[in-house]
Image (tube, rainbow, N blue to C red):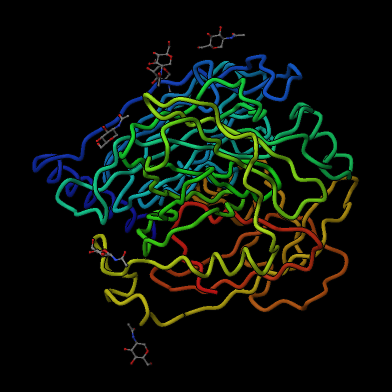
Length: 456
Ligand SMILES: *[C@@H]1O[C@H](CO)[C@@H](O)[C@H](O)[C@H]1NC(C)=O
Ligand SMILES: *[C@@H]1O[C@H](CO)[C@@H](O)[C@H](O)[C@H]1NC(C)=O
Ligand SMILES: *[C@@H]1O[C@H](CO)[C@@H](O)[C@H](O)[C@H]1NC(C)=O
Ligand SMILES: *[C@@H]1O[C@H](CO)[C@@H](O)[C@H](O)[C@H]1NC(C)=O
Ligand SMILES: *[C@@H]1O[C@H](CO)[C@@H](O)[C@H](O)[C@H]1NC(C)=O
Ligand SMILES: *[C@@H]1O[C@H](CO)[C@@H](O)[C@H](O)[C@H]1NC(C)=O
C-alpha cells in the first residue's frame, strides 16, 4: 500500500513538474569547484588550508530567490568532504542538506553535484565543510540571496556589496584538532582572528581590503565562520545600520559595534561620510581571557592619510550587553514578502505550538576515549548507512531507532548512551525547541535545512 502511494505520488510529481517546465522554470546558476589544500600562512605560520579554486574564502554564490543552484564539487583532498549550505531551507531535496545523516561525503579524488533551490528566501548565509573539523581549515564561502526584482527591499541599492568573514583561527592543522577531540581533549584556545582569510596587524602595512567612494553607502555582510568564539565587529569613526539578520529585514537601528556569534550573519549599511582617508575595520574575540584582534583596512577613494593606530575598543559589557544587543534586533514586519506559516495563516504570532522539545546538554565528557557532547542522555553517532538512505530503502529499523530521547528530559542524565539520535516530527507541526546549556562555555547549534526563529 505504502509503495503504491509512493508510485502514485511520484507520477503526480512528475506530471506537476512537467507542467511547471512548460510554464517557466526558475533560473539556474552553475558553478564548478576544485577543492584542494593550499599552503598559506594567515597567522604567519605556513599551514595546510582547504581552498576552493585556490582561495579562501571560496567562490561567492550570488543568487536571487527561487534560483536553482547546481554546484559540481571536485574533491582533491585526501579525505572525504561534505559541504552544508547553512541557512538554506531544503524544501525539495533534504538529502542535499550536507550533514552526515542526509548526505554522503564526496570520496577523495571524486566529484559530486549538489542541486538545491533557494526557495522563498533572501539574505546572507554561508557554506562550509561539516565533517572532520574541516571547517577549522577553511572551505567556506558566501551565499547571498537577493530579493526578486518585483519585491521591494527596504533600503536603496548600495554602491557595492562586501563580504566580511570573521573567525577565530588555529595554527594547528585540522588533523591535529581532530586528534585532540578523538583522544578526549578539548580544542584549546585559538591562536588568532582572521578576516576573509587574512590577519591584519593594524600597523598601516596591510593593503586595503575594501574601498569606499565618499558619500556613497555600502552593504557589509558579516559572518562569523570561526570555531569557538563570538566576535565583535566595528569600524573606526563609522556607525553601522543593521538591515538584515539571517534572511530577515530588520528595523534599521544604528550600532557602533556588533557581536556576531558563531554561524551568524548580519548585513549592515555603512555610509562613507567621514574625512576621506583610511579606517580600520576591527574584529575581536568576546568573552575570552585574552582578546584576539584583527583589522582590515577600508580606504576612501581619493582619500589621504593612514588609519589611526588607536583601535576602537570592544564594548565593556559582557554577556548581558550581548544579549541586550541581540534583543534590540527586530524584524521589520512590514518589509519583504510574507509567506504563509506552516498552518496556513499569515500571522506568525498566532501559530499554535504543537510540540515543545527541550534539549539539555551537559559539559562535554570523555566517552569511549573521545570527547563527546550529550543531548538528553544520548551522544549521537552516525551509522555507517546514512539515515536518509536507510529510510529511502525502507530499512530504517535495521539501522537506528526513532525517538530515543524524551521531549522533556531529566536535567541530569548519567551514563550517556552512544546511538544515532533521531527525533521524528509530523508534517506542518509547529515545534518550539528549548535549549538548556549546563556547560561552562558557549554552545552553538546549527539548526540546519529549515527556518527557525529565535523567540527568547
Ligand atoms: C574553478 O576552476 C575551474 C577549473 O579551472 C573552473 O572551470 C571554474 O569555473 C572555477 N569556478 C569558479 C566559481 O570560479
Ligand atoms: C589547488 O587548486 C588550485 C586552483 O584550482 C591550483 O591553482 C593549485 O595548483 C592546486 N594546488 C595543488 C597543490 O594541487
Ligand atoms: C549579484 O546578484 C545581484 C542580483 O541578481 C546582482 O544585482 C549583482 O550585480 C550580483 N553581484 C555580483 C558581484 O555578481
Ligand atoms: C562529475 O563531473 C563531470 C564532468 O564535469 C560531470 O559530467 C558529472 O556529472 C559529475 N559527477 C557527479 C556525480 O556529479
Ligand atoms: C520597514 O519596511 C518598510 C517597507 O520597505 C519601510 O517603509 C519602513 O521604513 C521599514 N521600517 C523600519 C522601522 O525600518
Ligand atoms: C489554534 O488553537 C485555537 C484554540 O484551540 C483554535 O481556535 C485555532 O483555530 C487554532 N489556530 C490554528 C491556526 O490552527
